[in-house]
Length: 240
Image 1 (cartoon, rainbow, N blue to C red):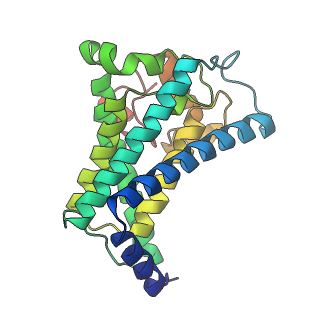
Image 2 (cartoon, rainbow, N blue to C red):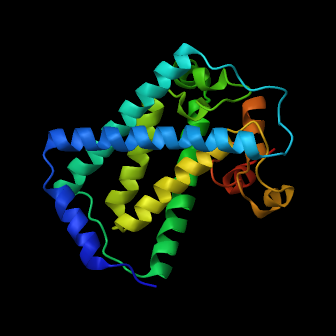
């Protein structure tokens, strides 16, 4: 299976010609769409999934949650603009692979490498002096709701984005691989913050970062810092 290189090059050429005001509008629209997609996915699973809730009730939705979630949209838009700047100035080079096997390998590499980087970043966010400044608000959601994924301090949101950009500077990932990874990241984050089990119990043995896995982190903040997998928690002794 190969992807149409001519069409892809045409889209990249179109984005290359965007002015910065156009980039600002485009990145804001994309991130609003992803935000609404995540909320819609959360609500859909909550309404259709018959599995029992992990905790007695969802965390109540507050005005501060909405304000912080909107700020997360702005920060994600900023990261996208920074990525566009690095691309247009030659720091990020987008690979031109058309091979499905190569794309799968690149997506897997992004998942594992970002999981490792996010493990250390997340672990660092739980150091007492950093936790009070940055991460405490997210953990007010001992249970979760449809906004929990987006209730983050701006420095956390930008920090996650910068780690991704560092990987893109270091290797020429294709735009298809990057797009697939980002969509998986959003879906995984949404599912991880459900208050209803989504994965079969057998997935825990497959080293997958399941809904239960991340829910346990909200109950016990000293465990389960990984995001996509439980590999690094098992390696560094923080798995529960």
